[in-house]
Amino acid sequence: MSVKVDSVTSEVFSAPATDRKMIPIRTIPECLKRKAAEELNEKEGTLTEELTMIKTWMKQSGHIRGRMEDQFLLGFLRSCKHSMEKVKIKLDTYYTIRSVLPEVMRKRDPLDPFVRSVIKMGVTVPLPKTVHPDDPKIILIRGDAFDGDVCDFPDILKVFTMIGDLLLRDDDQMMICGQAAIIDLGHSSSSHLFNFNLSFLRKASILNQQASPLRQKGFHFINTPKSFDLVLNIFKGLMTEKNRKRTIVSHGSSLESLHKYFPPSVLPAELGGELGPVQQYVDEWEQKLIDNRAYLIEEEGLGVDEGKRRTTNPLAEEKDLFGTAGTFRKLEID
Image (cartoon, rainbow, N blue to C red; front, side, top):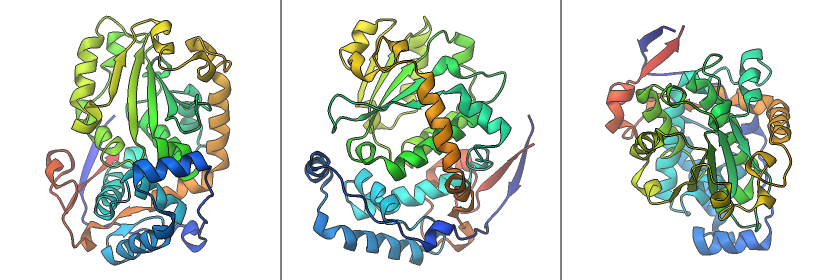
């Protein structure tokens, strides 16, 4: 694989079809209303005003080409606990980093044979149930489902972001209560775990932490190999200080230990659970991605135009990764 680097200062974006059709905010259950009010500072009476302020700011920014749907923007409000300044930073970071990761954010057609083959691996699998309706949603990451002979880590991250885009739009429990990750390393070998480019991992960590409105509530590792301590140290090193303070548990190969946090009623059979085989959820998400093909492809036309930026680039301190702030490098994968 060769990498061609070109300097770019601006990009042209076409308006997504969904900008012309606003999607109303969904009604949520009382338990989620309480949680949003108590933990996220959400006030139903001010939502319209807050959303109008965000849309006005996005239009006036000049450089952001982003979605204007209320439900989409509400996810960012909830992620930032309704702090308008934090919303602005996260939205800017969200679209800025996506603009400089074409290997992740382009060619997102779930019907493309290669993309579909990565989807079928089922590395990222949102699970459908939680013990309580206001618990964090559970995301299963299957490390040994990643076939490094077929694809690279950016391809896995592409599908991860495709799933995340739909969760951001559709899953109120996820956006209000956050997500807990179960990372099943299965029979992953040491070489399998280290088959990553650390520079790209740093970019991925920014994409999934500073830029993502999906809030992490904990990380649980199961079926870990002997070399896992070193892997965990690298993993923690890529985390923000906030996420390092989250629950991080290595359960070794003990399902009994895992079940203290996640009972069998919310787990697939492969983890000693009662939900049946995980493949059914892999298949369900494959179909869901296909059903939302147009929405996912539209994301390719969104991002930032650095030539029109009037504010500080949120990735300015990461210029060693992305080039000089304001004139980012555009990577083209041959």
